[in-house]
Length: 491
Image (cartoon, rainbow, N blue to C red; front, top):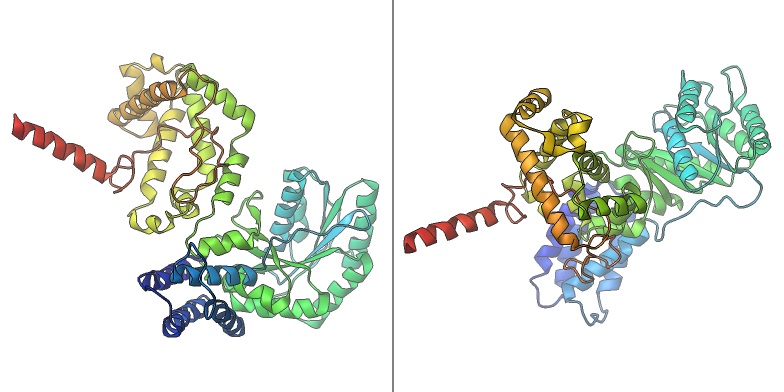
């Protein structure tokens, strides 16, 4: 989402980093580039003007902090103001008051309200709440059946609306039904239009008066940029929005809506949709996003993703299997698929401090993902008995596995060899202990000491040869080759 903005800002600060001290001229030139970067990212021009003025006030005439260079002081000023621009601290839902709590979703047609209602229900269910979905959009074809289908997938109750009913009556009756069923939160999926009109606003105001929702969330498509901000301003004037949900944040939009919407409407972004699946909605953390934009990484998000993918009990069980060298292909495939849930190699690198810029220098980032897919196919072509006991795989079985996975016997042999090497290495690393060794506390690049040292990384992760500077990459291979040539010359 913020890739182009991040690249521009990183370039600006790289230029300033060579200066021994910052002068007003330096700051003026640097802020001019920051201004252009924000405008190119489709940020509202009034917001950009205020942002630049606040950064200038912070940077000019301020004493440089002890451990910072002058250029780092400017980066810190931009980071602090960028965090404020995005909303400051994370904003939680306020569902205090009458039970059940009511969340009303509003927005234009096509912004993703119905899908966001399902995603929000899934997120709240994980927080031990009991959500109740209400389809109140009686105008869009299949809107009601779409939300009812999502409710069945999530196994949560849904009000049986029909297109003949009045949306205000639906909302009122649904809240009463949710109270009887002891649900703790009601999520109202209201109607949208292709544009703002008076009947739409009047209906939403009537629904608000009928059920008095604690939260009114405006759902906006992040791909629409500044237009989303203008629409949000109109909705806010009629409904007094309490928050914003930005959808399609995994797209290639420039991020202007996320950077402008808080300043224009006063409503903070609370959630962002990061994909099509019902599990792909995240709480919006302004500080983390500001860090990502400035190339500082986001280790907390990476840790949370890892913890959600790898349970503590499962981790200990896998560690015990590794210690006893009974770790098999069944376990390996499970762990590899869990790793894929965390994200692609490119997305993981961007979350690690200091490695964000490396993502663009690695050439074809699809190579590791392709190798993981091939390894998955090879393992899936094995029988259950073979996955659990790899020693059974002889030459004829290898030919059958290669045929079944669309690979060569050599590639099957490579996977088997790497797996065996990984098993032996893990056994040595464990040293007879029952868990993985903990990570050092002060890793370079700002890794926190709280990084879960227990979750196992698939040791047969795809070969990264061809990626200079990485383990198994060109630099190490070339060094070994050169060493061999030198030894031959001596002899």
